[in-house]
Amino acid sequence: MKKIILAAALALAPAVAFAQTSTTTTTTITTEQQSKVRAYVVKEKPASMKVTESVTVGTALPASVTLQTLPADVGVTQYRYAVVNDKTVLVEPSSRKIVQIIE
Image (cartoon, rainbow, N blue to C red; front, side, top):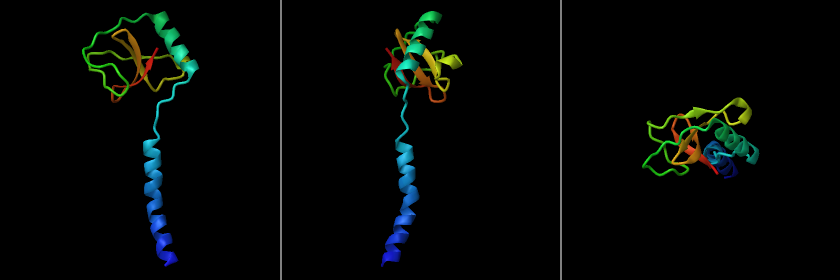
């Protein structure tokens, strides 16, 4: 009986580990990185693009919004940014989803 329970537990272990890793993906931008993004955007003064869609974390920006790259020293090169409806947003480039709004 112990062998059956052990075998079942071992069979489920990879699925449990996979579930844990797939659900813990979060976007964490440090306070210092937020400050660097904010300072860079203020310095560059990009024009704000107007969209009718909601500008909230998790929503995708329309293709009409141009995504800009951030310099390496900002520390968030995996994302792009845009200023949309007067909000600076960090965007995951492949999905165009907003991952953070920089206040």
